[in-house]
Amino acid sequence: MSTSTIPPRPLYPPSPPGIARYREQFTTLGIFLFLGFLPWIPIFGWVDIFDTSNNFGRGNLAFVFAYGAAAVGFNLLVGYSGTLGLAVAGLFAIGAYGTAILTAPSGVREAQVGYDWPFFLSLPVVCIAAAIIGVVIGFPAARLKGFFLAIATLALGDLIIKIISLDEKVWSGLKTNGGTGKQVPQFRIPGLDRELSYYMLSLGALFVAMVAYAILTNRRLGRTLKAVRDIDIATGPLGISSTYYKLVAFGLSAFAAALGGAMWAQNISFAQPATFETDMLVFLLVVLIVGGLSHKWGPLIGAIIFVYLRQELQSTRKLLFLILGIILMLAVLILPSGVASLPKRFRDSRWAKDLQRRLETLTDFSL
Image (cartoon, rainbow, N blue to C red):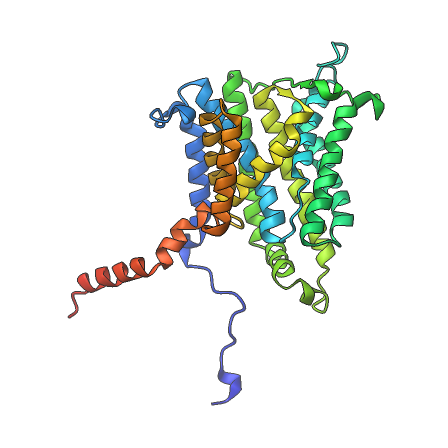
């Protein structure tokens, strides 16, 4: 047979026909619509921590969404590019403090004074500034790997928190109120009370982060970041600048971290530098690793697990960190792809495949 008659093989598998190709998008939209209407359909009353019929449950879910939004960007950096950047706590603090300073009214006491900007103007400004700082952090870190990269980015993230705590000693216009803490002005959506406002704001932030994540990872950026992660040594001869793509991942991760930090600050109403030190980094690592690296819904699942444990064990802080440490070790050893990978592991298991064969035999009436 002539080679000219052989049809070319497609580079990527063809998309499913008809409406099936949009199944993932419809699923995502359905989940967010469900979460949006959840305060008016409180079906989780049997779980006090997430009971949306009261402000306590709404506040906890708002924390879930805020941590989830930050972890989505963290997932892009660690899960897709394979870059263990640990400056996320400092970038999270930029989102919290940045929006608090810009939106606070002027001419009031030191703990509240700010620049009186509108909330929806200050939010993108702070996130873009955090993205630029993330790229700056990525420049020296992009040449490092493994343990050295983790230590360098951890130190740079801690430096951000130290600058926030110094306040007037760094710059008189910083207005962070030093280590004492900063009062966060609450933005209220017209027609909603305070608790519903930060619930919807946090849900909107998570939606933006996850939609952006889905779009970016399904295009060239996602495939290239995977190549940088898996075959870094070969990307140079292929004409791919691994440094450039790592910097892009740093910037996008910083943007999402600041977005999550801003939503977290809206919920908690008060920001303090000590909150963003090692504790916040551990919390976000638990959210990411337990939820599932490189999984779209991993950050949300991990955030639900973490917030539930934090509320259940809030009276015993040492026990909380002990349990979080045990969960992290178990996740790394037993479930390295996180809780989000359990459905796929079940489908690929020998038991599930054997069950599927038996069901196919029972429903085969052609014999």
